[in-house]
Image 1 (cartoon, rainbow, N blue to C red):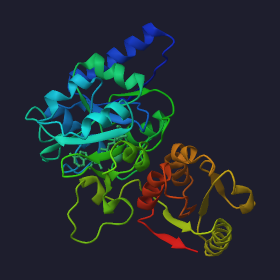
Image 2 (cartoon, rainbow, N blue to C red; image 1 turned 120 degrees about the vertical axis):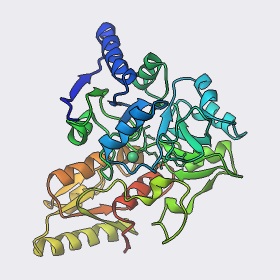
Image 3 (cartoon, rainbow, N blue to C red; image 1 turned 30 degrees about the horizontal axis):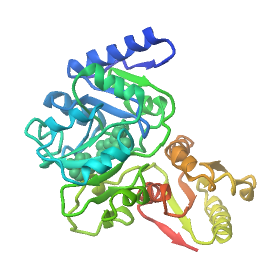
Image 4 (cartoon, rainbow, N blue to C red; image 1 turned 180 degrees about the vertical axis):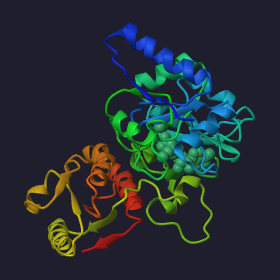
Length: 354
Ligand code: TXA
Ligand code: MG
């Protein structure tokens, strides 16, 4: 089905219009339709998590493999109980510390959650977003919203309504525009269904923040490297080439001066071969690249700005038709772990030590 997609810019100072727009979205969701909405991490492609037909529409709109499960979004802690069959002990302090916020927790699922929502798994991923518009939308619906990132499968996640429009125009009836996503990378995913909590996807709630609350948290080996042939994944999302721009991404890692020199060299070599090359630079380094084609993704001194700018930067390079993107690695601690995880996946973990 082809939709004439509408974008509604949510303006929360005009309360009447705001309420009307949220209600319009909720009415569509109540009819089993799919609506894109803002969260603090990235935009989500929402549908009623308890309605199988609605969920199937998400997979169709996104072109997503049906074995890749969705995150279920709730607005209040009381909405958790009906969705899960038990609450592992670790969950309580984690929810206290990080909900609402960019932390998705995986629980054993209850029978109320359809198998299509969880890609046939016996577990369900749940998150309470830290975004007033997302919370108001869930409240107005009165049911939880399953929502993957609102990009076409394989594209970088959308951090603006324009990104969503680019991927979803004609595929869904409505996009709620809440401005630019603050964090810019998808939520941290933590599996609570094993003997110890396992970090499956790093995000805005960092390993360090999690371990402050639960020192036992371990990191899945798939977080920092490509999947080994035949290894069983805990999170189906890990096995797909995610966050991928069309251009080939090369990451240069090592002492910063050497990285910058190598990037200049590679840029000149590839350009001489007739390739269109873009440099993903930082505020501290861009001037070193002179008049070579570069974009500033953010500041090395404030890695959160790199997280917020990463997907937009990858999309811009694609829009400009680059063949190759040369990117500087950043230290993989705190939010840097999530940045390097996404950048690594975009590059197929093609990281060059210099
Ligand atoms: O920030 C976010 O998490 C965004 C916003 C919209 O909330 N959502 C998002 O959803 O990134 P998605 O579908 O793009 O990524 C969800 C990830 C996938 O890698 C999926 O495999 C994993 O979470 N996942 C979901 N349910 C799971 C489960 N029961 N067990 C293991 N992994 C699960
Ligand atoms: Mg996604």
